[in-house]
Length: 420
Ligand SMILES: [Zn+2]
Ligand SMILES: [Zn+2]
Image (tube, rainbow, N blue to C red; front, side, top):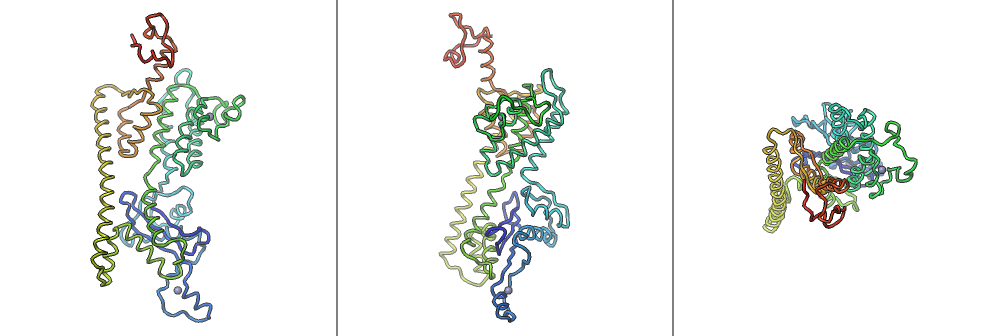
């Protein structure tokens, strides 16, 4: 669901809102707000009543109030067609969201991208808290720690809004930062990490005694939780909005003003029809108006629509193949699990590579599998870390024929077979 606005919000003379189905990507309803009518205006300036005309002036308040008012009226109109919109997906901070909550006559559940994600994170954190007693040497997972992560997470979402890559970099630094490891902060030059400015005197403002958190197990658990929540957040919403946006843009170019007459409304109607039906809307409309569209128009529109559908089918068949692939992978895990209580997926350098890609692909194509994976109690391990530790500890299996030990980064580390 989305609202479109033309011009700057605070001085625009026209505005329009559309409700889109989040799965069908079709426009369910739309409405336009017009502040000005040229004919009424010119009548008024001459001190006369305007002649009869198709007046589209329907908005009296400020331009800023257009968006929320259009939104509320669309929601309140729905019951006239015997439907209700039960969920509204929108931005946290929009006035439309607040107004829908206040003025719509039936119950609408609000899903915003970021509050939805933060809620999911907090419930995962509470689960960690209830499930475990801290191991020796591990920080107590208190309410204070939960609050700390919630704060970092929502800060990260608001600060990096609209920049997925920056958001990802910032998110993966949160857990190590709390555990006193600032390598990721440093590599990505994260401005919120105050340790970077003052490594000697830095202490965490919101953690007990300002101390770093401790405990490898806790750290791993938190890393996975944060990663999963981040992935859940990415609802594929903006693409369909963008497509309507650009179609409206092509019919109602911003450089011209159509809002003084019925033209703007009709152009927006055309954009909505094209979004839902394709170019075929043009031929249908002409027939309805008893106008023969002509052979070339009919052929050309059919061709454009055919190409559009073919492109979409290609895309969805790639999607389908990926979904099948992921499904069979999870089925394989399920079959292999037997009576074991957990599965550990091990990869070399997988913590910074394979695991991310796997989880991201699942989220993109089959998010429902994440739930199954959680139920299967799947863990991820990185053999690179294991090998580094074995080398550091001078494990007996790594002793070479000349009595020396394999060193980190040495080529022989790759060649020497490990003996138990
Ligand atoms: Zn008028
Ligand atoms: Zn840091």
